[in-house]
Image 1 (cartoon, protein in one colour):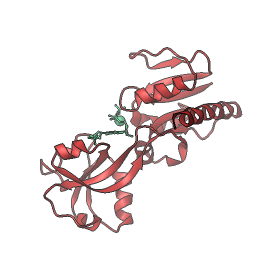
Image 2: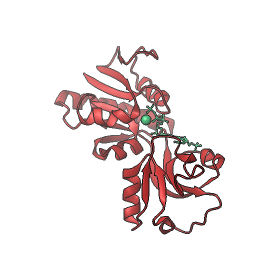
Image 3: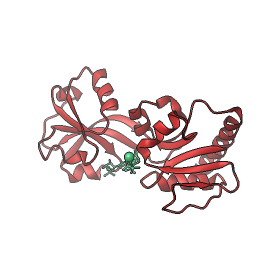
Length: 210
Ligand code: PRT
Ligand code: ZN
């Protein structure tokens, strides 16, 4: 038996459920349930907040998970990744107010930057020799410059319309992300065999879409 954790409700949920179904796995899902069991594969599905998924898989509470690489790497468990899934593609980018002067990442030296991704951003800035003051906030990062909290932000971008709507200009891509399948490090031989079956089916689903 394998326990797979997926996001309960959010941007990953629909595509995660669709992928499991496209792998030929049947289950009954209802929006209020926290877990469900597949009827034709030894799989239990847990519905969780995406931020909790890397930790649960690292600890073995869940055997597998589907989560964005941004959340996985920020949580500090990049080595749990076993398969890139090709959906929920986005990027973590630095942005500044449209009118602000900006030449390169060195322009951020000594500045205040608001983000929900202090680990990934801190590593990026250190790699460029830039020291900045990171303000970690968990949501509505894009309003930070207009309320005087920060001179720049670092947040997830997909179409770019949220930045535009808040008078911000995207200046650097810090990290590219997509949804990935993750697995706990201590699967039994039997579970590893099931994981390989699942990965084989996931790869076939992706190939069929190309
Ligand atoms: O409740 P829970 O904690 O489970 O969910 P959540 O609110 O933390 O996450 P959710 O559902 O918003 O996102 C889940 C994952 O989807 C993220 O971790 C990313 O891997 C991926 N993803 C893909 C995105 C986006 N695209 C995205 N556009 N996550 C967030 N956004 C937000 C972004 O934060 C910004 O506010 O959308 C806005 C920007 O979008 P554009 O299109 O205007 O650029
Ligand atoms: Zn979350």
